[in-house]
Length: 337
Image 1: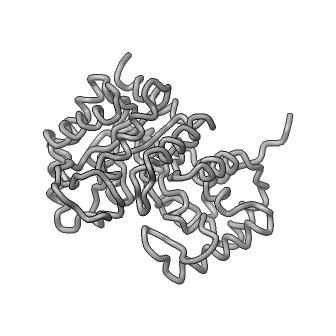
Image 2: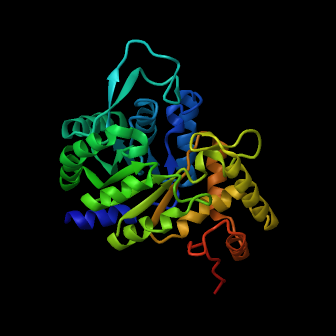
């Protein structure tokens, strides 16, 4: 099979709903091995067949847990490169947002050797000889500041070439970026041939600026999109207490916008989280959406929200209220034949 055909087949097989694996790496709160295994097993039983992870998630913990739970199972997996994991003798209980994680420290490395080493270590933890999608993790100006230029140079001259080699060798089905920043995706489109972007939090009910140039460019280049963070760090699913947005307490403008979104959804008897999960999937470039899952209830909720009947009038009202852009594709209810 030619490389382009294999990439197309890989992306065509991505299901609409996937499993975001940061939580089983103890993001923000610890999970026991048994609890993590239970959540992954519940996702498999529910029919979720795509699992996204990264070395950064629990510093190998997420990959290790997924590797144990998915061994011998038919599931698609994406993981990431761009950080080496260096052993540490002692460490704080919480580091980089992960609690009781593995005893390693992540070090950014987008060079060819760094990417190859990271990939080999991931395969070992995942107990696999290949992955379906490999993503360069957390490139971008907002993440790296002045170091962005150096990291981008390392990636384009080294890591990206390594990823292409892995794709050409058949040990990776498709390659791209896994990031929180839209701008770096557009920068990569100017310099590289990628298959897919995993973009977290930037095309949601709260944010649709990606419609201006990014999503049209992806559609024109036949680059697929996986949407991470469909709830914007919890803002679109949390129902009480402090709302979170972009991994921190939400500013007043976001809190007020979420309240308006919630009121419109309530008028149609639709949970805001259901609308948030379904909205990105209406765009033709979006292949899959991967909310984080840490509990059995979150797995069940995601499956229920994915299949919930949402009236077309909800989307019309969101647009008329200025809460969804007029040019945003929205899900359409198809009448029974």
